[in-house]
Image (cartoon, rainbow, N blue to C red):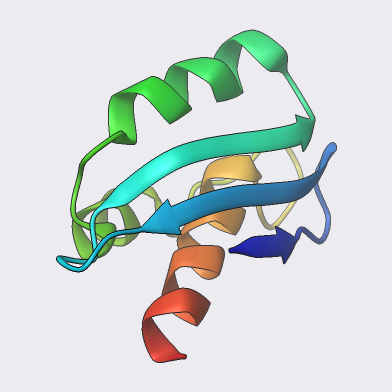
Length: 81
């Protein structure tokens, strides 16, 4: 799935969900390469709902969202489709 982010330095999130709704092949376009690469490794194989529960609402500085929060939104959209 591809998700266009809003309000973050990253511009796009790419990922796959398997038949058990676990996250695979997560990558971000733009943003902080080290941090987002680390998040991608940490959530590999995790259930999407657990990632949502962990990352939803995370803020970046003064912004109302963050790359992790946008990932939670992307995963929510994928689970709802």
